[in-house]
Amino acid sequence: MVTISNQTDPGSTSAGAGSSPRPAFVTTHWSLVVSAGRNDTPHARNALEKLCRSYWFPIYAFVRRQGHGPHDAQDLTQEFFTRLLEKKSLAEADPAKGRFRSFLLASLKHFLANEWDKAKAQKRGGGQILIPIDVATAETSCGIEPADHLTAEKIFERRWALTLLEQVLRRLRAEYVRDDREKLFEQLKPTLTETSRTVAYAEIASRLGTTEGAVKVAVHRLRQRYREVLRAEIADTVASPGEVEDEIRNLFAALAN
Image (cartoon, rainbow, N blue to C red; front, side, top):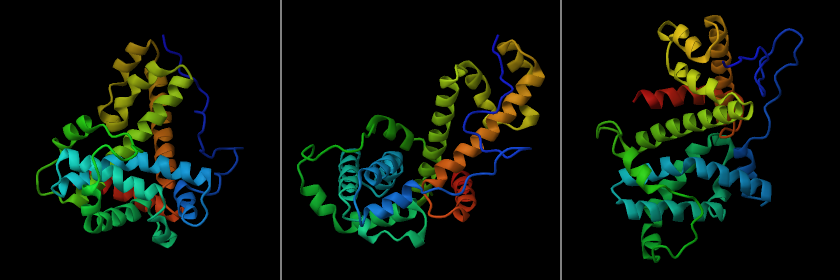
């Protein structure tokens, strides 16, 4: 039997009776990245590396869509991030433009248009591998993208959206594992993509050895926490709180393509 706690999930920022108000918009990873272009610090560099590791797949997918083969795409992706991490592009970062992904895509287009010959001239494997790239997994995922009508930009947006949602799920799962509720998470995870009308609460309750009412409460809390983590992940890539909701709309628009 799985016990479903009645306590609020750790990290929740929901405001209720007697609770403290939501915290102010904190310094984001993107804000730290912008500052790194002027004043390098370990904190800023770690923030940039975290964002780069989250964006390697959208970048790789964009490069592949531009007509480069798997090996060249891997080299170009690594070289692009190498130069970015060396801050050769960060001096051009403009926080007024807001989104990290917009800056990243513009920088990538400039790199591919102006630096391809230089990058191609480098001996394969001679440079430092900064971002782990799982080419086999990437190629499999690239092969199941929607029909060829998608442009490289739309594929970048779609892969950005899917990658971000995968990160949200990983964070959620880690929280449940930490609280010794991994089985509960695995049973409830499918409800994140199902409507309330199609969720088989009774079946889930039977598998967990609990009541249908307890499952409904647990699903509600999971969905609430999912929204909170999604907002937190997006907040890391924009410059102001007003852009979070707009970016969420962009995310689901990218998935609808």
